Amino acid sequence: MTLDVTDLSKTYASGDEALTGVDLSIEGSETVAMIGPSGAGKSTFVRCINRLTEPTSGTVELDGTELTALGDDELRSARRDIGMIFQEYDLVERLTVMENVLTGRLGYVSTWRAFRRDFPPKDVERAYEILDRVGLDGMEDKRVDELSGGQRQRVGIARAVIQQPKILLVDEPTSSLDPETSNTVMGLLTDIAAERDVPVLINIHEVDLALDYADRVVGLHDGDVVFEGVPADVDDRV
Ligand code: ADP
Ligand code: ADP
Image (cartoon, rainbow, N blue to C red; front, side, top):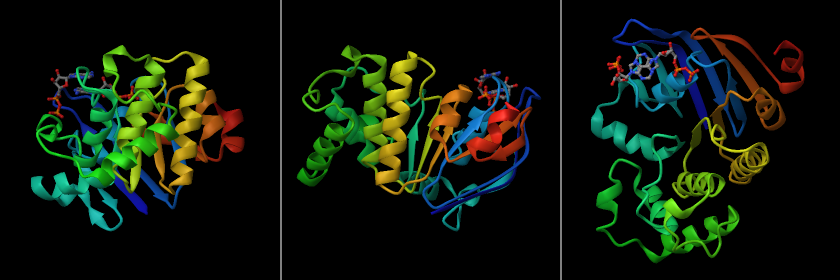
């Protein structure tokens, strides 16, 4: 797996220059944490990768496919290879844990339509395995609006992983969690990604968590990369 982002810029209609020519490559199964203060452009960056936000210029390539050049239909199918754990792609409150996880098999675009389809038994079996792996065994019939923040984040991880994505994009996974739960969720996320050999790009404003869990840390400030390195090298710079 290779993600190549080249000279990515985003200026919003409001005139805000959120990204000013960012380059980033991820190869293999690395966990990369993007850190930076609020407003640095982290969320814009991760959203531009799958074009939830349209970049103003620059290119994004996933395994040689230039996502930034795709038409709507092609983009929709390319997004099946991208596991998203995003806050605004939050869980469907009125559905159960199992139903939410199974929507991952179809991508997130057609969540409601998904429930009019039958899922192959193989997918259901895989969903049980993943729920077990994220520590939600026995919870499959609970509605997600009955879950704690940490449990919800586990459902989000399970939903992204069942897609068998080529890459996981994660936007602020711990922002609404207490420190202990944050650690548990980060550990689970990075462990599962390693077990499945999937690279991860995580936006996170908690520097300590980035240093503890990432293979590489990228510092973003005012829409540009200001440092990049392994946690040990970055430690004294932040
Ligand atoms: P785009 O250039 O991607 O079309 P827009 O500037 O039109 O983006 O804004 C998209 C949406 O985001 C609008 O609904 C707008 O109200 C909202 N928005 C505007 N400013 C901000 C901001 N600073 N942070 C988050 N959302 C914002
Ligand atoms: P971070 O995730 O690091 O907090 P963002 O990507 O959310 O940073 O924001 C980067 C900059 O872009 C900020 O100045 C923010 O106000 C602006 N911004 C973000 N989303 C929008 C939007 N939809 N419309 C206009 N400006 C936006």
